[in-house]
Picture (tube, rainbow, N blue to C red):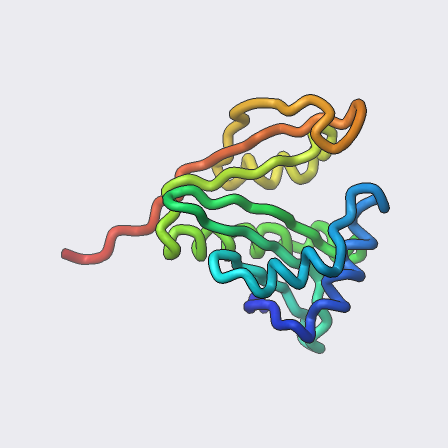
Length: 152
């Protein structure tokens, strides 16, 4: 079940952060707290039937562009559709928030994540050398956000 994250979810989000990224790439608890509090940001979590958080995504909108800032799925929940559900939800939120384009950066070696983003129509726009540190490049991906047109 996808829903907005609450402050009480911060510990679980930090556990995902630790499981999902090496120490030198992890976001701090303060940064996640700011994500939860920022008005133009959206933090969504996926919970299992028992309420355990299995994944998180956060993004923000500025004018007509949304950025997906972080997507994390617990390693024991990979390949269960959670990343896809989180991406669909953040894209829907971005469209409703007025975004026309959605952008993100992803480690150029993260083939699984790149395949996921391509499945949502993201295209490679550019590369950022050493974005995640020496020898760790990023792909910049983007997609147009189109909401379905209602009945006239």
